[in-house]
Length: 410
Ligand SMILES: [Zn+2]
Image 1 (cartoon, rainbow, N blue to C red):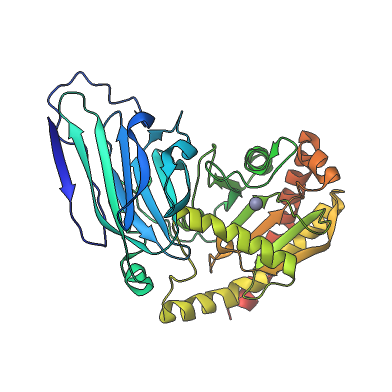
Image 2 (image 1 turned 180 degrees about the vertical axis):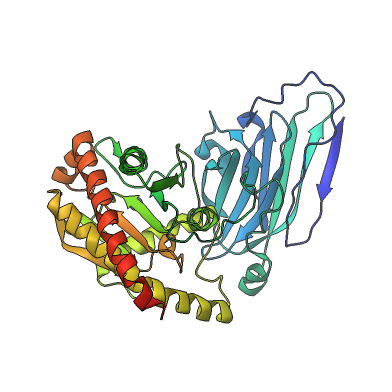
């Protein structure tokens, strides 16, 4: 017997179903739900697409679609993906690829690339009363591009979906308290960033973020908040949100990307601008914004016109402070003997730098595609020099910023 929780929600679907009431108390609720590959498949069905996933237990979940490119997204309370083979799971022409993994701590995501606009027609999860096993089904039907766009979009995070936060937004702190620095280790979880010769950007940047955090805390007068302190996926929007929540004075995003073309090497400090200073910066920004495609969040289309004006006003005041921060960082890295790129200071439209009122920079510490940089990035002594340079740069910047603040606010 199976209890059927069936949502027929037309096209705009936000199916957030908790587990059905269970009779026994003997089940192990601490174990993660696992996917039963023998009873899971994604296939073409009629003119549409059918998704069937069997889980070892029911979990809260939701499903929705996204545009540009068309994707279907399934979110679950954490699922153990061990043994899931996408080639075995995906047996359809109307879905071209899929990825899955941890989306944020405690939550998992499966993203299905759709061959065209296929709108969610119905979806539901049934839970067997005897075994507790759960069966998630979803059916997608062809739609016009316009109809698909109208019903697509990430639903807002309701209760239970947001990360555990007390929700109280700290007001921006004055300069009397400690300097609050948010260090953002690039990538994480399902998104590894660049990978070369066994080195992975997300791991190296997490190591650097932790080391830098210790260096800054030891310097005194600085509070550090990490956007992630483990190998979990954090959306770009969430990274910016964290900076706001903790009342950050400075936001530093750490990366070590790889470039296929050219011979990029040496550190680059990026600031935000509407137009990229060069093609390489534009390409990097574009690639990092693909992270948003994965997480289902599109920052670019979010702000309405009024918000745009407010953001511009905030940036007007923030931009010179950000530029001075970038200057100080480049100078300190040079003084510390860290190799710099021939264009060490650049600007491009990175989503992660879009906190209008917080000076934010993205430091490309080096390039994993370059042999020398790779050796440096993997060397704790080199990373310690970079952390020391950031500490020195912040000290210089703070002094300048304090001296100039009365002028800026006149
Ligand atoms: Zn990166």
